[in-house]
Length: 627
Ligand code: CUO
Image (cartoon, rainbow, N blue to C red; front, side, top):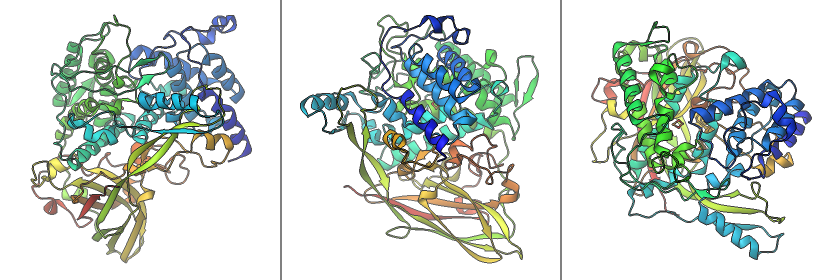
């Protein structure tokens, strides 16, 4: 890392540490009279910042736009220091994070892990209190670490999925994804367009749902039912999280509660927006604010719909199509106290760092995804010609691990330091140990014949999907496509004749490596710039079953020269987890629809019949080993 970046990194980190949790806004006269801060400090300190609430986002946007617009790094830092004591704590961290990721003078700076900034959003309260307690017994210089214990039991079938929903890495990924792609991003003001943002909103969340269903099948649970009926009683969920900023728990939802109207938005509004969006899909166009019809075509339809459904600043008509996804999160988080009469915290669905913990998250997003799928139904299925890569034949694929074509998963232990966030008047570290799923490292070996006489460039696309459903029936291709999870996508050069392509699981284009801890960043030990967004590699593949669970491993090669967009690959920054997070400040590096070739209906009954010579599949087994 160049020394200036190291110096900036050192100066940035304290902004994220030991935030003073007070309930009164500390407006200095200087700040109050500074017109740059007008409109800030509206959401009170001690309130939970909701990443989906329109008013909260509006204020956060004001702050991150102000921070991004600061002319020099020093001015930026100065604004950060001034606003730190008077804007809402959660809103502040969100806005500063957005600014750091988007200021050109912050290149080379890595954001500290959100789980160390706000451990209370990741660590159950029982474990946090135990750490506090033990730290009072231990000498102040001694480190204290406690284990996170289970917070549920088998009476709740969803408990079996807790390891996935409450995984630190996926929740951090989701937080950073929304920091990289703020719903309110105004490219025309900030000057940095976000390519295919609406489509990526669809695809990244579709993949989370597919991954969740793969995990459900691994645990002998049926695939989830989408949350289509907004009056349906919901399952319960208790996060066991407490918000340190106000000392209150995130609301527990008891089983059987239903959505309630808020002052801002009613359940009926969600229904009206849903119907308008579905009407638009069936008519084949959306109507903008001036009554102009914009076609939902195969090139832009998903992106336009993504912006409408989220909804983002780029929605073509927010007044008419509303903001169904964002308000859905808010309504679900508010079922306990819709009019705020008890002054309690909302549930975890209110925050991008916590919402993945709640089973309703996936059912809500499956419903959202079903609207996109309704659109995809309006497009023709890919023809053989669109699928083929003439002259390229994939002969075979195998997975090299301790046993060929078998991947073993295990539970592993990791730890997380909580003492960066709070004052304890002690020098020893405080932290928690937690378990997470992991898999053995593996390698794909793909044999490809290039029948041509010249070197060619190909994009390799690798997906994984379950072979059998919860009843033991083989999943037909058109259902399977909803469950296919992307494992990797990369470029290869093919020479004429037989080629052997090998690729490590750790190189996956959907995952990022271990993010450096705050201590590592502070000591300057981490010289690599991490862009923070990316699926954790330890959850690259689903858990599988103890006796083994069969999956299709699918590989397809397409023509790289046709797929290529812009100059990607030559100047890419933050391209580690490009499939789900895009490439920073660049066009999305693949011209194909996201999720290709599984994004459209497959009208053939057997997978083998659908495959063209440039595709192949092999059965792999995922086996979970109890440690
Ligand atoms: Cu990421 Cu609903 O958008 O959570």
